[in-house]
Length: 163
Image (cartoon, rainbow, N blue to C red; front, side, top):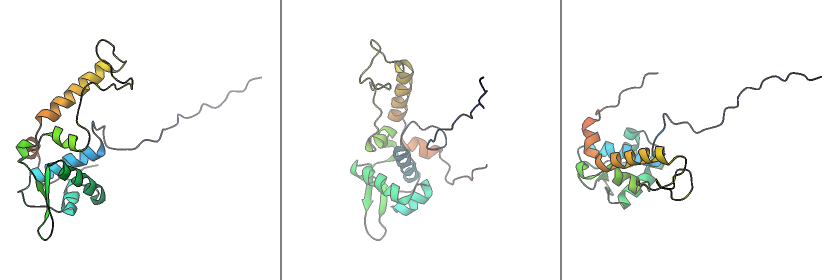
């Protein structure tokens, strides 16, 4: 005689939670945030702590991001009293692709999303058609969008989230 087993509840898999799905890593997102904060400022040197507060980024994490942006020539740092970080170039001269590249995430085509190495239209992986659309859109967006574009559209003060 068979007994009916109780249907099991579907298991929830543990996942890291971030609001929405970002096309870039958290480090790259933080870099874009802080660069936008600096772009809409008045070119006065800002401390890492002040930037962390405005960009809502943990200050210890932001310090690593800032070092990479300085090394890439996108930021200048000034030590001492009145020191901090400023953009190394005009906001209109810094593309998102530059910021992503500084974080090791320059959008490049030709990467196989399925892990087969290199794939193309003649020898596509199962994800190739959809991945190509996403990859090309990301490359176009990062290549044409500058800090000046987002700084002009960004509100100066952050609105409180409802919810």
